[in-house]
Length: 287
Length: 166
Image 1 (cartoon, rainbow over the protein chains, first blue to last red):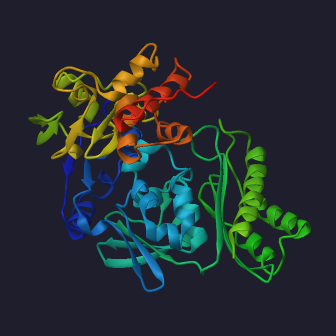
Image 2: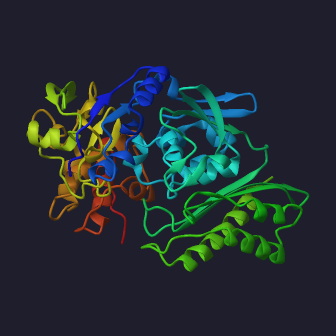
């Protein structure tokens, strides 16, 4: 399969990349790890006239602490996330999630920025970012701005990004020390997108849930932040009755498609099962 | 569309060429350089038959544009045997342990296993299986591929290979 012809650009600064993407508008696309856009180009589902490769921009790489936040450059690969000691210590759900993304070869090139910016509801990181209350740093024609992950996703492949925008980094507030987290993903085989998946970050205080945040993957047109379900759990000891209510609240916001991964009703139920498992595991890890 | 000048090292040899930006690395290697060890299997980045080692990373060369590989150092199955023609420990392992039947997936399997052993010289069976999860084999059922990689790990470490009881 051979993609359509395009002109290749390799800027060395964010400013230059923004200039190129602004200039080409809808005919230009940013190229990060390429593992979403290249398959789409091969299938001719995308045929941009200009690809702007972000690989030559040093400012887009790396993981660093900044006050109470961790900032991850958009071009940081899944492989690099998995290898980061800082992330493993401070936000272990990221490593746990990365290890469930695609396969080793894809993780060597696939980037966090690409994963969150593409707006593919099958991608795993967006729901995790909503769960963590991350924000995305964006550079565009009008300058720099930040967009909360929880406000970013508008529909399948539709996000708050506008033509000329480059997502440059992901800023994540470090969850409290002693928090517990888990990412539970049901998939047909290794490397597959989720049939349903749930991300949980919580703290336990005296045997009760102190704080709780929940994200859901691939059970709607966008990743979901299950705010109501988390609210129900706060203050509880995750007892059966409360758990049931929270799972029902999470299932109620899903609207999955019926596809090769199963009928819609099954995928909704699996979102509930993944949430139940993620809550149990997060609780067992909380100190 | 204007062609781009690229330069890269493939199996230790510097290659300079003009390519269309849309030329995928697998097509460049096979059609323009006659390096036909990397195979075209699924062309959708699932099967791993096209895996090559690029700057210390295992990559699926069907999902990389040649222009992205400009300036890189690439190794394919053609670059694995020793200069005197003797086999690399992985190649020997695949032969000794019957790690292939039709052989279509083997170049990709070996290149992926090569990087896996570079990063983890003594992987467990589970780590091997997880490490080659981006490579599909439709013949062997993977048992003998895992053994072949264990054989190579032992040989590279200079210890005798102990086949696990079944």
